[in-house]
Image 1 (tube, helix red, strand yellow):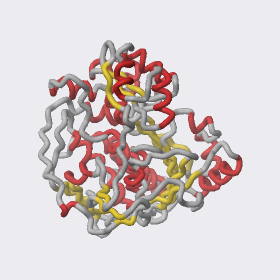
Image 2: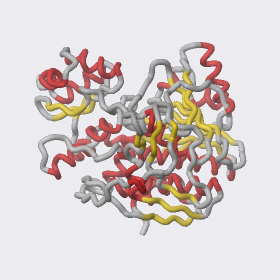
Image 3: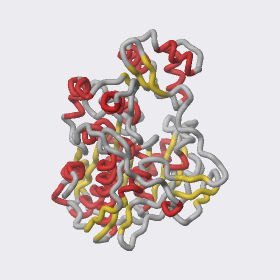
Image 4: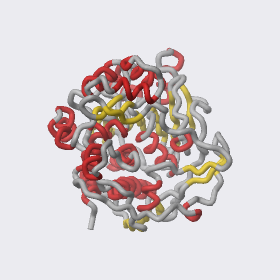
Length: 441
C-alpha cells in the first residue's frame, strides 16, 4: 500500500507524470518520535529517487529506509579529525514567563541580535536568566525585529488557529508556476544547477542532484560560513563566492544564470528581487531557466518574509509542543532529526527533475516553491503517535567502502539509501570549504 505521505507528494508533483519505475523499499526502520518521521523520510527520498530514475532512463530502484533515516542526520565519519558542533553554545530552548522560546544563534549576526535584545552576557546561564523576564511572544517579536531568529512554542491547535498556520495550510505542498516555453532534451549528466542555498534543505537537494551527474555550482556571499555542515552539504559541488552588491560580481552571476539549466535558491520572498533578480529579470537572462526555491514559513501570510530554520519551525508549528505533551516531559521535545529540512530538500530535488522532464516533453518552463512549514504540515497530517524506534545500531557495513578526501581530512560516509539500477550515486567532487573554486561553469 502506498504511504499517504507519498500519495500527497505524487499529487503535488503531478500524478499525470508519475514515473513508471518499479520501487522496492527495504529495511523498514523508525526513529523514536511522536510523528511518522520514518514515513516522511522514505516517501521524500523515494520521490526524488523515482524522478532521478525517470530522467536517467532506469526502470527500477530500491530505497533503504534505515539508511534514508541515517541520511536525515550526519552521514560523514571523519578519520582522525572532528566536525565542529552544529550548535552555538547559547542556541536552544529557554523558559520565559509564559512558555518556551527557541533562540537560533548559529550565525554571528543572529547571535548578536538576540544578545542585543536581552542585554546580557554571551553565556547560557545569563541568557536563561534574562529570558525569564520576557513573555515568549514579546521576546520572539523583539528578536525578529532586530533581524534575529527565534520562535515561541505553539501547540498544534494554536498553530492551526494562527494567521501563519492558516496561511501555510492553504498553500500547496509544491506551488508550480509556468514561466516560459522551450523544449530541451532530458539529461542528467552535466545539468547545470546554480545553487544559492544555505543550511540545510536546499543544499540537501543539490547534493542529491550532484550524485546523479548534475554540475552543481554553489555560490556564497563573502564571510558566510556553516562549518558544522559544510562537510555534509558540499559533497559533489564546486563552491565559489560572489558579492552581488558589486558590479563585477553581478556581471559574473548573470553570465552564470544565462548558462544555467536550473536555479535553486533559499531567499525569502522579495529578497532576491531586492537584489534586482525577480522572476521577470531571471527569465530575461535565461528564458529556459527552471527555478526551484524554498523558505521557512511559507510564501503567503504575515510571516512569509520571516527568517527561519527547521528547529524554529518545529517550535512554531506545534511539533515540539506535541512531543512535550505526549512524552510527559517538562520542556520542548523536537523531532529526533531535522526532518523538515531533509524532506524538503528531497522534495526540491524531485521538483527540479520533474520540471526537467516537463520541459523536455511539453516544452513548458516550470518553477516551484516549497517551504519547511508546509512540509511540517504534511508530517503533522499523519497525526500524533508514539513511534518506537527499531533501528539497528550503525555498523561498519553501513559505510561506503571509499575513503573521501574531504577538504578537512579523510572520511567515510554512510552508503546512500537510493539504489537506481545501473546508475549508482557518485559524487565527482569531495566535500570541501566554501568559496574554494572559481565562479565559472
